[in-house]
Image (cartoon, rainbow, N blue to C red; front, side):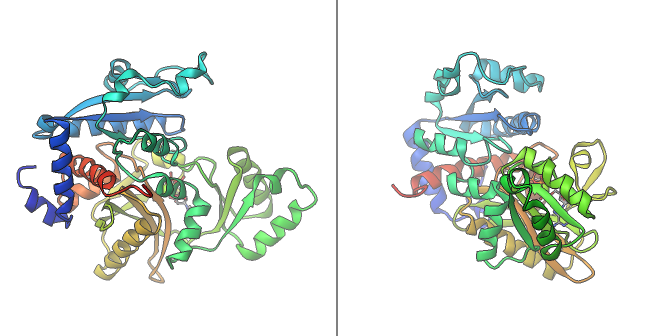
Length: 389
Ligand SMILES: Nc1ncnc2c1ncn2[C@@H]1O[C@H](COP(=O)(O)OP(=O)(O)OP(=O)(O)O)[C@@H](O)[C@H]1O
Ligand SMILES: [Mg+2]
């Protein structure tokens, strides 16, 4: 970044960020060693590798190359940590390493590669369970090293769709009607299961969505229109998660619009993006199928709707105590003008073609500047206190 003051004002970040950052950088020497952490025990393992490759390129682009050196760390699907030599190979090949269900030596789950001690700032690009849910954030917090993104609370509350909706409700954010169902209600109480379905039919009705509370990528999500579909969807969701959410469909086929947030205590909102697709809803095949969905950036929306979306995105970010980055997703029902918040993603897709970096690009923050800001925000968050000290 050649002119930090211009950049700060362009996205409105306060100057004390730079003060802390410069002090930290001076204390650490000329180059910060960025621990890029990717892979993970999640269904989004492959996307995480692509996110990390894009982040690595951005962290080595232009003047970032002078400021940052990279130490990649790869978490295999079985939870084993791999240090920079192997991790770099995974980044270069874009292929996950084969792994078993559990590592042969369980100590590999908590014995980090020795290079982990050299990291100045952690930069996780882990998506989904065991990466975006506060578990890795707690581990990194114990290391007392700054970490890009939300801490334990924001990550955990943002991952669990029920906890998230409860916080959103408290913050007065509009959302569709929903109910919590537990696996034990679905599987272990055959006597009450029909009554449970009766109650859901009255409280939520059809069509509705049944979702595991803690997955992502639309895995295990079903749109249901009848009693038999509801029963099957609850059974299927229970196989993925202990906690299940049943929620009303947002009017007809709502427009799906998203806003990127960047910052800590005074976050900024990007332009709005829209996902368009032909299928019934944004399911797994549509998300990852070649050409099945398009991103429209910026979305064509009335300015007043853009304003509402941006202020709701910032309110959601603050309500969950998020930090650094998040993408907030909404349903916009054009016929009624209603907006419903759907969810927040605290480590959103970060590949070169992902919504989050593209929204910032369109807002005037190119990818290399984005990663630079995120590293500085992580240092600032650590310097000003992640939580109780
Ligand atoms: N209440 C709803 N009304 C209309 N469509 C919905 C509703 N809930 C979910 N959908 C559809 O299902 C898709 C996936 O749902 P959702 O975003 O809640 O889960 P997810 O994408 O798996 O989570 P993540 O974004 O964390 O990966 C949405 O993008 C949307 O197309
Ligand atoms: Mg989603």
